[in-house]
Length: 507
Image (tube, rainbow, N blue to C red; front, side, top):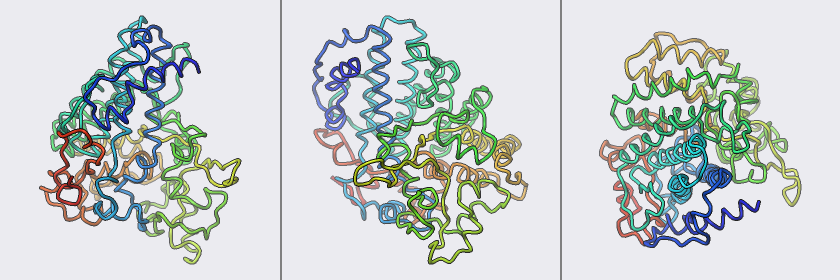
């Protein structure tokens, strides 16, 4: 505890992104203790990296990040929180002062830069330097990858102390940093089963990046460049990165959809690749709440009954059945509670909606005014798992002309679910996209939205104004969020996304 308090005192002025990244200050922050006095032992380095993971978990657990930015939810009924953003009519729900802020992302990025700028000071073996450096590179890459998919052009800061006014950098240039970081991380990090902490204890948390984590994110980055970026030459690089994960032998699929719900989603399973660890005291606003909390009532919530109203998000029985038309698909009964039989119950009870039951392990308040009520779910946030990488490789193989390879990958996931294998009368690319929707239903952060944007099928699959966007609208940034007001403070170089500047977010 003393070590952590000491570290916080050291880091507060350096990485307080309320100042450094919100206001882009023009002065180097002062330190309370000499930086060089800290970076001596492996415990010092581990403490700094631990603080990075606290920030990363705080970012990923933030309700807005996981819930209120998602414009790709597949529900028939959307409460007011999602209705306007799902129609891409953000101006009806917010103005520039309430637009999503990238503060949390840059806070954690700042910590990555701080570690990368100082880790060389530690007098520890190169192998251990590489272990911690690889973690910082991977998390920085993942966060910048999220930033460029969410805001498009954004601020790029890769060095500690790089302060002052900042203009946005084109997203393709940010992607180059993402890829460079990940490629370096694949060379520095050990395989997941060889990860050990400063005490030589095996690391079991999938929040701690390993070599497989870096390759998995790299596969997604190349797929984004090839698909949304319309640079198909990157498909092969993405296929190669995905193959590194699949053929490593470090990960394996669980046996069936029941084990997905009972083993994979709680976290740190053989199938998990990158996750955000759940912490019980943070359940209200951290991993384990989010979409499970607003999409599931009975029977997941022990306080609910079949007639408990679902007022935020609902998926009609017909839509759930259309998503899983194969009655042999075991996900149909594992992700929903008695889908077929409950569909026969009168709508005055069911609202005509399916009972989602993918996320288990509810936690209840144990004291206070909320005693006995739902607190959250004892589940990690699964960012990437092996099934995701199989289907991503299938997508890239299909788009690059390797039809047999794509079918093999698709069928791996279908067979695990007990569903019928691919047949030639199906559109292969669409079959893979739908399989991702089925397999990864409600998992991750904006997973379906990012999939749709990557494949440029937003006009067909999203709602409202997404359907009528012109190519110029897309080029101008319509698929991204506007930059929020706080990014313009003390920063005359900041400019607004062109599309949103003319649609209610000018400053």
